[in-house]
Image 1 (spheres, rainbow, N blue to C red):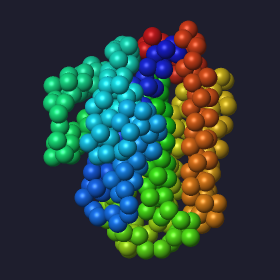
Image 2 (image 1 turned 180 degrees about the vertical axis):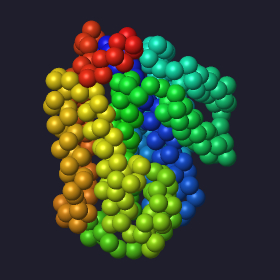
Image 3 (image 1 turned 120 degrees about the vertical axis):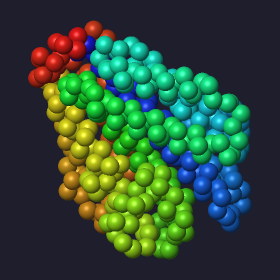
Image 4 (image 1 turned 60 degrees about the vertical axis):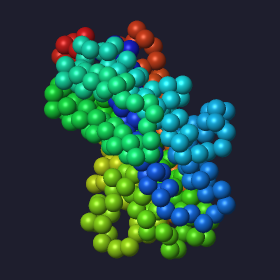
Length: 329
């Protein structure tokens, strides 16, 4: 498989996953805004959280200034000038998919293309009542794409790059959501383990579809340490860091090739730390510090993946699956 094909598949998957995660973050922010927050400048305090999670606070401030609900929502959902908006992510996903029409199935293309066409038919002047339906629509389209992908595509190297992009992006977003939300709810290190507002912690879990899983596993009141354990170390939680790195490591092993040896080593290190880690050790280090280190390691891994497999446009991606690779070309 050519590196440019692998790159398009990788970024197609990442952009779809990023659109879904942005919808999740904004949906929870709107729900949280319905609850009273007894601090000065509550609206700006609350709405800077989604901007910080997605790393676009600086570009937002240049355009709008102080964080306000309507401006933040439009900027992160529908603003074509924001490269991280849901609109831009779905546009880029479609462009990448169109470039590799021969490497994906017709059903996958139909889902992405129809999603883009339907998005452009929507009204751009949404009020607060319509945004919830829009976020659900984005999540549903992302789920549909993943289901169609797993149900129609060959289990070859193309699927490995799709999984690699999906789960690398998901791990990054879960770590960001947990880090930013955790510090909003517990701004002081000394507050760890203390009582926190039930609905705020519930909103954090709902943002990663983990509320029911928490109840099933722990059967207890929400606590910061258990929330962190669920989203960091539990490998049976689909959006946890551990589960994501399971998939990233497996995808890299499937792709194989001597040029990706360092990427596999880095992924293996991260996976081993999560597999054998203890939540008490995470908190003794400091959850913020732990998540910051994880995000830095993920960024290094992403750069190594690009360097090994995606950067040189005429490079051939090495693989042990010669037969299916030849069919893809």
